[in-house]
Image 1: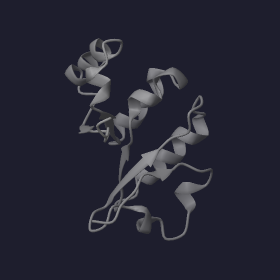
Image 2 (image 1 turned 180 degrees about the vertical axis):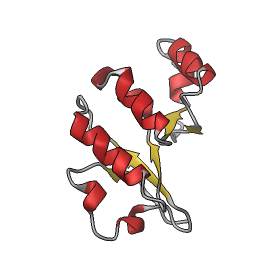
Image 3 (image 1 turned 180 degrees about the horizontal axis):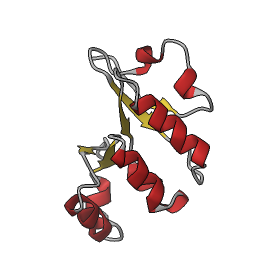
Image 4 (image 1 turned 90 degrees about the vertical axis):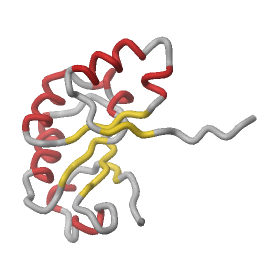
Length: 120
């Protein structure tokens, strides 16, 4: 199946042929946000994509964004139906596993991904 993480860019919600950025055969867009504080405009753009009847946004590896945003941004997006994905390492790292479990228990994680780590 053809698909990739789509890097957020200014104006993405108005991009032509946005459906071509979804995972093949689905309406799912795996969206990677910038590693910076999210502006209201950025959050609104993600909400605009989600509010299209034909697109489901899945934010990729949300654990990587935690230092850059406040919880209001994620809560606002979740309320609009945006789904959240995190990587398994979030649960395996002793520094982050407690936070990961709490987020999972609160229903803030919808999809669990893995990271390929080749043997040394």
